[in-house]
Each structure stands twice: as C-alpha cells, then as structure tokens.
Amino acid sequence: MTPETVVRLMAEPDRLRVLGAVALGAVTPDAVVAASGVGAKAALLALRRLREQELVVAEGDVLRVDYDRLRQLARATSPVADGPGGEVGFRPFLRGDRLVSLPAQQGRRRDLLRHVAERSFTPGVDYPEAAVNERLRAWCDGGEVDHVTIRRYLVDLRILSRADGVYRLGPEPAGEPGRAERHVRAMGLS
Image (tube, rainbow, N blue to C red):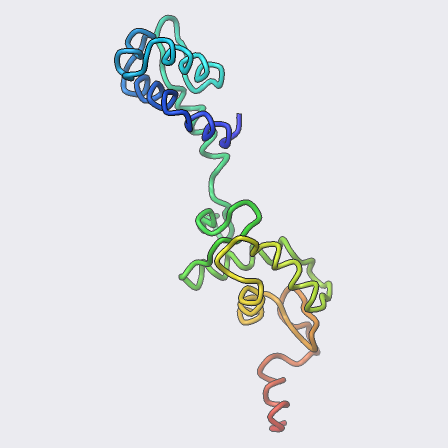
C-alpha cells in the first residue's frame, strides 16, 4: 500500500467514518455500525475494505486501527530533507519533481535550490543557457515560480556559476574571474 492508496481509500466518506469509529473505540462490527452513523451494509463493506488494506486489524474479536501501519505510511511521505541533520523540510515547496513555491527564509531557499541543482546538473559539466533553462523549466511546470527566477537565484547564491553564457554546478572554477572581478573589469577599473 502506498500513501496515495490511503488517500484514495479515505476519499470515500463511509470508509473515513468507519475508520474514525474504530479509532474512537468501536471494537466490533455492530459497534462500528452504531458509532459511524453509516448503514449496516455500507459500514461492513467499508470495514472489509479497510481490513483488506490493513488499516484496521482484528485481534481476536476486537477491531483496532493499525497505527504502526499508518506511521509507516506517514514516514514514506516524509519531507525530502537536505542539510545538516536533515532538518530542512521541502515538502511544502515540492510536489514530486515539481517546484511549487520558494521558501521566504533565505537559508531554506538556498537548501531547496541546492537540492534542485544537484538533481538537475552534474558537477564539472558545462551547460549552455538553453540546457539550463530546459532542466529548470521541468521543475517549474505548474508552479508559482518560473525557470528564469530559479536560474537567477542559483547564480546569485553561487550554486551555479555562469561565465560567457555557460553554466556549471558550483562556484567558478579556479583561474576564472569571479563575479566581482568580472564586474571590475567590465567597468574598466582593472
């Protein structure tokens, strides 16, 4: 069973009411029918389906919610974590491989963008701007942010380096001028 299966299972109101009745202490099928407010036939059908999916288990004649199973499924949907100790949760900002929004907090934004970049680019490989746009566009489909904004943040945060229209994961390689040095040269001050 996957977390998605549980969501589909609970999308049926009778099943949700039956699960709630068991969770609140109804330990027999008759008690579930009485506590859930669902008709007997529908309640027993929902109870059977919940038992098939192992969300409700019978220990002897007593029904109970399998909370260990629910915790296991919850762990399967835990936030993608990155950073020291895995404390940064990206779940509110990602839906699968789609970036739906950016954190307002600078540190979390940097960690999330590093996560995106590390899954999109190979260290030491040069990417033309069109390739960068294509890879970032895949993350942005259907979200609130666009690939150009993401690209700008990646460069500004030095997650991606950019020189002459070529991008690379990580800071500028040694020997190439950094951002400040390029700016000074462009102004004719060096």
